[in-house]
Length: 239
Image (tube, rainbow, N blue to C red; front, side, top):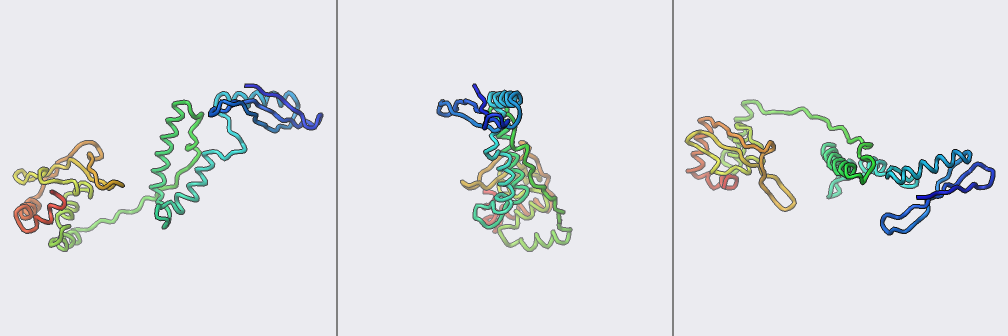
């Protein structure tokens, strides 16, 4: 890579640093112009610095918007303000933070492969995720909820959720073969999640299943469903 200086006008101390670079896509040579004010020696030092940055892949063209600046503008304008696909509002701070984490990891791999000198996502501060106070049902409210759902298809999913601590995806993925009424226990071995292609099953978050010990009440409810008129409701979840 070569470069040369041009003083405009002569004796003014205003220099044009002209660098001959090769386009990485086409392989053709092109020129980059940089303005500099100072002595000829200072202009020579600046030209050497620019050439070094270009050779090391750390040079940022001041005439172009950086990825970091773009991400700052994008997160403020698009993600939080109008990031929903349906155009009806923005995304939550938690969703934007997750997107930032994924993009940062992708760019970090580019740094490891020496495709980037630094990770531009490091210059973007994701929005703060506000932790909301959890509200829980007391004993009476829990009992009322279960009784209200008793004659509906949601009875057993609700009972297992509030009494056994099963997550929604775990309830959906539960099958009769995972239930042992003789021992009074059920095994959580999978979880279901919604995707663009439909519902799919996956391993639990920690990669390991767990066993839930059932109370006598829960065993009796499951027995009545397995042999009674509510079995048609239950097969929607535990086919």
